[in-house]
Amino acid sequence: MGLLRKYFYIFIIGLTFTGCTSNIFLVKSRIDENAYLMFGKTPQKTFYVPIDIADSLKLKWESDTRGAFTNSSVTVSDSIVFVNDLYGRVYAFNFNNGKKYGEIKNKGAVFTTPIVSGFWVVFVVSQEEDNLSTFIMYDYTKGKPFREVEVEGRVETQILRTPDGFVVTTLDGVVIKYDNFGIFLWKVKTNSAIRSNPTYFDGKIYFGNDAGEIISMNNSDGKIINTKKIGGKFRSGSSIEKNKLYIANMNSNLYCLSINSSEVIWEYKSSSRILMTPVIDNANIYFGNLGGYFYSIDKNSGKRNWEIKTDGLFNVTPLVTNNYLIVPDINKKILLINKKDGRTINKIELKGRPRLSPIIYKDILFIGYDRGNLQAYEVN
Image (cartoon, rainbow, N blue to C red; front, side, top):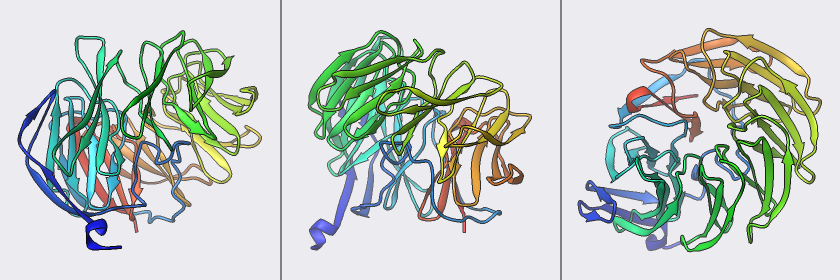
């Protein structure tokens, strides 16, 4: 591979565009085939990292943004860490030292984790007063938007990256598909608000809604394949593995559903409402609720392995490794939990409530908490 293909330069220049302004930064970076591209890393939402981590984590660097985080995550490509905030900004930080390269400033709020797609960073800006959003593909090699598309409705769920494009859902119950270049492909109106992050598997899109339904549709044309009434509002995202979909609702239930029929294979009744996306490893599924309980459930039988009760609550999606769970607790801490028996092995005390779902990239753990504080820890 020649140098022109192996390296690229990123120039973000201080000019004003439609809805966007930016600061100046310059980055030399490799094209990263193993980048952490989206919330949950994959379209099926893979919050499992098959590595062993130490029980004592070392702070590598700390930085901050100007605004508060949402319950999203960072994304990382080679030397660049991207993150959004509620003040309409998308930031780029140096992976190694936390130095801020710059930011893209927008009018509105960015609820969505920035998606890295080639030379573009992709996100949606929701307007504060109007029932409108803007789908933006920002070319960070040229320092200007490549595509800006108006979206009718507010977007507060994560963008879904599929093999052939991007899927956006709105609070009005609309599902919209764009191709890899941001060209509109199709739009489908469903009958209820969508606050559940969508997932993708084998050519189909899956999500829950406020009507307590699980909907599956064709990725190619948006045709609805199945609508299954389960009951209870779905605010949790879903995870997919081996033809099974795992999702939780505001009625305190965790469900395992068949991908093909949407029939319930098993359900587990917890003690309180569930907002976080359940996470899966090779044997079990893990989740917490708003009552401060955290659970390990056998993913095949639906039977409980263990539960713990804390003095906090859980609404941010955790991360699973070979030996530990990394769990944000709203009571200003990150818990390291032994996933075999639920014992808390260690904790990171924070100065605010955790707001970002943890990710690990190249043995560095990224977390974020109130007021836009971003931290990076060495895990080995």
